[in-house]
Length: 503
Ligand code: NAD
Image 1 (tube, rainbow, N blue to C red):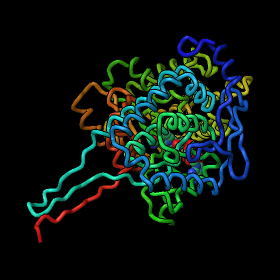
Image 2: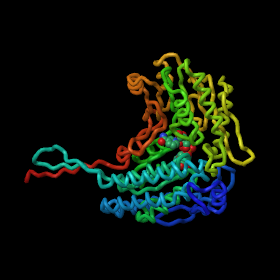
Image 3: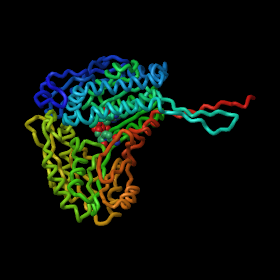
Image 4: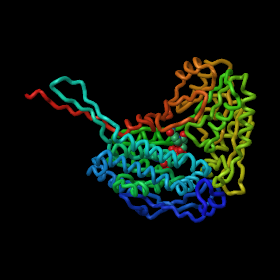
């Protein structure tokens, strides 16, 4: 069968029909069923079909996974290996991810409804690149010697935190798992990874590949099952030292409470967003801006934490810009995710579909005009599809402008002067990312400093690279994934003081 870039939709459909993914818990280097023997159904967003029956773990299974991780951390089977050896293991994992490009891309497309062209060209290569990048940090991270005078030697070293509970969402399962695993494993921690129930398959395969790459048993474990049970068990577990979470603000708050009520373990939260795209009157090439702004919200069917979901546009260019984004939206009709020609896939599941359509109705009742999309399409496929949708004439105080919709829905709010634009952009509970469009570099610099967001893109949107940190202000969370700064989240600083006075 033809695979990779040359594969046709028929090839991918054939392959999807015969795929038999591993769907049990991965603990201590082995797959095993849940203690209860229970499973849950993993459903494909593209047609509502059954992909796999996945082990539905419970508290007992979390205990087993944490015990395996704890043993592997306490006996130092990973953290004490020479840096060059650990680096080789993670580099091998990066290679194995690349070698299994087709398989991982297919699992990710089936689980999430992402277009196969994206999982082949973005999700899988980006995950591999992340492992490679963090592997390369292992033998390039130095400690410090403190300036404590001639009678003392004070060393400041970075040590792994211990057992990390990593809880990840369904929108970029491989990429976000790789961000967390890359940094946590590079720094010598052991991990219990909890993927979302909509998208458990790539994490399970990744754990198997990590074993094949030489990661010792117990260092990476994967538990699947209900988030409220497993996530809370991890956050309250006395033998977990750190929680790293990416997901909704609501669940992030519950994890913060769980950590506070249990043992004050370390926690970082990468949460929701409602990112503004501010377009000034001197935007320049309107067509290029319309394309980038459109992709900034519609990519991955808007199921992106940093999606540029609020267009805040100067009144003088609003009409023309919105018309161009709407034209792009009409071109990007969602289609079969396994067709290599498809640019927009499905919504992840029926619940998310209903949520997005509910917000479109809410927008209408709040007074917005739907100028593109706004309804379910391709219903005959059995899948969950919504085309690019634009709500025009939105007041930033309305719920559609304040709450995360997490679908391909752009709201449009006009402004007259730049202070007003900044005030609207910052008037949000979230602060993950923002875009700013202007040809005036002085203005761009001045205004970008006043935007309260973890990432500000000037004259672009969603440009990304593993070299730079990613994370939010305000209710978009705290802590950072990606780049060297992410390593801080998985290490403790230890000061060791040697007395050299000879006394
Ligand atoms: P979610 O919060 O529903 O679930 C995230 C993870 O938490 C899943 O593994 C889920 O099973 C688990 N979970 C669910 N309920 C839980 C509970 N009560 N206690 C502990 N864990 C629980 O989020 P989602 O729907 O999977 O993903 C979408 C959300 O993720 C959006 O809000 C999006 O903005 C956010 N997100 C943020 C970033 C970022 O980097 N800031 C990146 C991607 C997604």
